Image (cartoon, rainbow, N blue to C red):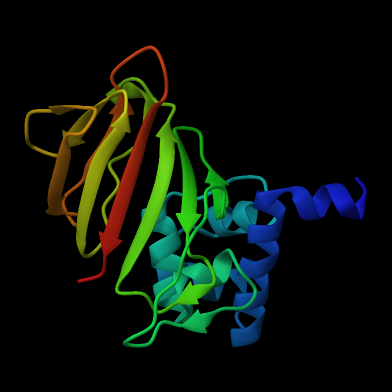
Length: 194
């Protein structure tokens, strides 16, 4: 594979940054696995660009490595300071695609944000498309920009949201999103750390 093609692959870019963050700490895969709570094989596959990680796993790695989550998507960034502002133009994001979601990480060059804004598409159609619920510390907001979304919340009835509908919840509670129609739904999600 040519170097130019490799650089255009978001999974490979992400994997290189993750590996570099781990090596900066002088840790083995086993040490990062122990500190993050993820299994070695998951971290190894992510470092090699074989898999993409969901937001909850990204947050676990960032916390363990004591880095901003944005460091996985951008080699450099500036810390958000009071009084500053940033503009994201259409198409200005870093892409992370999993089997069920396409994440568009907004403001990857702004580090230490109080919240993580993401747009994306939902490829999953049913709860059975997932292996397990997603959960991470903090609070989460979702608004449906196009289509219909079913929000599955652990130990609760599913909630169906249509275009323009939104939901706000404790993201430590297990949750999943699935497109409620034949087309991938478009969403805006904002996660805030606890």
